[in-house]
Length: 84
Image 1 (cartoon, one colour):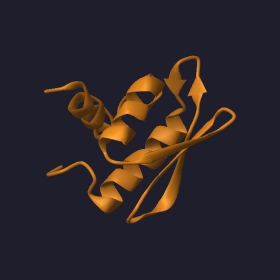
Image 2 (image 1 turned 180 degrees about the horizontal axis):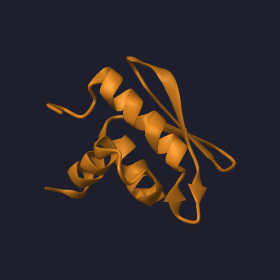
Image 3 (image 1 turned 90 degrees about the vertical axis):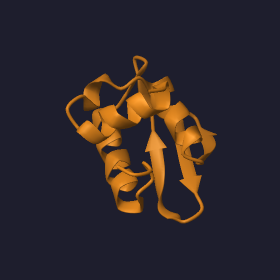
């Protein structure tokens, strides 16, 4: 299992939202085909076919838990995690 799969499984598991590294979350979004735009501390991700805009911020090197939950809902809604 590579790093992207591990991070994806952790997000989909929903038990460690406060323990997701910002860099890992950002790398996962790139792996899923999202484009990034940075506005100050806000990293905005968009992808064709996904209506919602994903906004993530780093807090001490970690992603904010509520933003991880929002991303999990988008992954599930658009079935971005492959067979999961």
